[in-house]
Length: 208
Image (tube, rainbow, N blue to C red):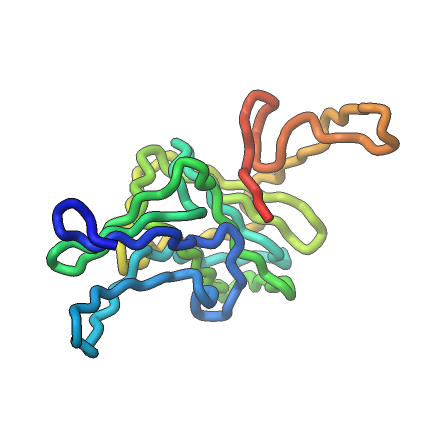
């Protein structure tokens, strides 16, 4: 559709909350592109809408999921509106119900090596992490390893933010079952939500 200033507006663009691991690349449909089409013009110049976070991991764990959560509730996945300006450069506005988390799912799990780093690529909208982000790694035994960084980082459109190499063996293990709650429903419940670090945090947002 056409915007107030003659810009082109594309609604309903999806940044997936769960992305599939692809060795040496990013998940299909995880890095959307947009182009402006003039009447009768068959030459389209597509431009990337989002950017990429590249993680390099070593260690002895077998990785099944990697989740990134912004420390200031930055919106990393969900439905976006994309606006193409006069120069055809896209800008992104995430919907209010978007999620502050995004995950890379490894199926089958990726076995890390202590010497040679495995590379993981996660697509997100252009984002400025004012206070860094938290990396949560889940291994094939459902152990959760966590690393939090408070450094300012920025993921720009059509660029890759390559993070320093990390050894999973040096990360702290997180337990979500230290204080189980018995609701009388035949199973015990965790004391706080998945993705949260304390009972007063919301945790991750999930939808099907």
